[in-house]
Length: 117
Image (cartoon, rainbow, N blue to C red; front, side):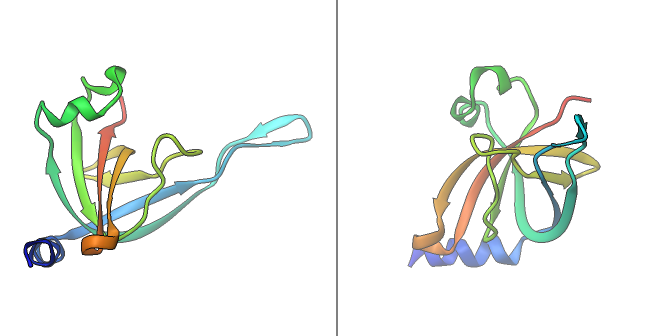
């Protein structure tokens, strides 16, 4: 089956990518405490996206460098509280959208945009 072959290729060509999960900021004695971060490493296949694929993003994000990430790890996206960040090529990328291929082929496809510096 073609889909299973694609999943095998994604796993074969994947690289380690660090994921940063953040907690929501909390108020302590009337002052906000910074969100805590935890990190873990996943395996992912990463590619830059084409101009056509940028149309899947909200208009305000289309001018940012964007990557497509294929992985079997489930990540939080931008429409959820504090989306996950990916550390890739010495940059931080915020996970924006998800295409769930989990039930068909065992992986997810994400678009992640580079955080402004």
